Amino acid sequence: MKGEFSLETKRVFVAGHRGMVGSAIVRRLASENCEILTAGRDVMDLKDQAAVRAWFAAEKPDAVFLAAAKVGGILANDTYPADFLYDNLMIEANIIEAAYRTGVEKLMFLGSSCIYPRMAPQPMREDALLTGPLEPTNEWYAIAKIAGIKLCEAYRKQHGSDFISGMPTNLYGPGDNFDLQSSHVLPALIRKAHAAKVAGDSTVQVWGTGSPLREFLHVDDCADACVFLMKNYSDAGHVNIGSGQEISILELTRLVCEIVGFEGEIVTDPSKPDGTPRKLMDSGKLLGLGWKPAIELRDGIATTYRSFLAEYA
Ligand code: GDP
Image (cartoon, rainbow, N blue to C red; front, top):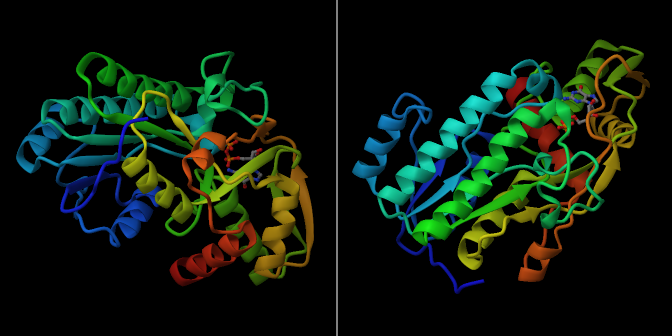
């Protein structure tokens, strides 16, 4: 690992600033003495190579957080494989190449824990990458994200670019997608438990068997880890960003119901996919660099529920 990178007075582009992760990075960067650059879809289509090149040439960012991606839960991934593969490949390839061409000093690419093989030993270490077959329900997204890691490594190897990648575990928090067809599990459970409470229903339904295990990290912790890595990490290998807080989907549902105040029964729907049985990351590399998460799952769900109420209810 090389020395430190300073964000002081730098022009920092957050790609994907309207998304849950990008908006959290923008919030986190507000306490740094840097200039934050963003570009909405109306200004630049990240899938359009010419548009991305032109924007980078004109704006000349010094640093880039690549948090733009087509994302979604287990059903969305399974339903739109072409979008998940094509959109993500285009977005990352265009940004990484444009960053190299315009001399961006540092870039951080964000991936996901689904890059690891379905049956990777748990907790999953960085070196489990490409050691076995992927989980089929999200392999399209995973392949694109693996390509993003390799792009960063390749530009570092061939051109000496200081491009790094971080792989967050399952994230949640304000700004999440609460649409039941395309969301991840935590926002879906918040919305379902809230709706069941308001309607006076006797049950709330959970997809799959409820037995899969997932690790959750609050997006503000993730953003803090991203800024930490941007400043303190400069190496080819990607870095896991996790909390170590693992919970089964059924236990998670109980916790969400308790926080929301829904007292009815939880029923499972085994006709829906479970996905990978367990997805716990080994975040020893990041912890070893001196970072740690600050937000407990229960507290994080409670604040996310409040932001859901403010926005939707
Ligand atoms: P994954 O971590 O990539 O599998 O993505 P998800 O967050 O979409 O799903 C995590 C787990 O939660 C899977 O086992 C889902 O079947 C389960 N799950 C239970 N209820 C829901 C729900 O209402 N929505 C979603 N997206 N997942 C659910």
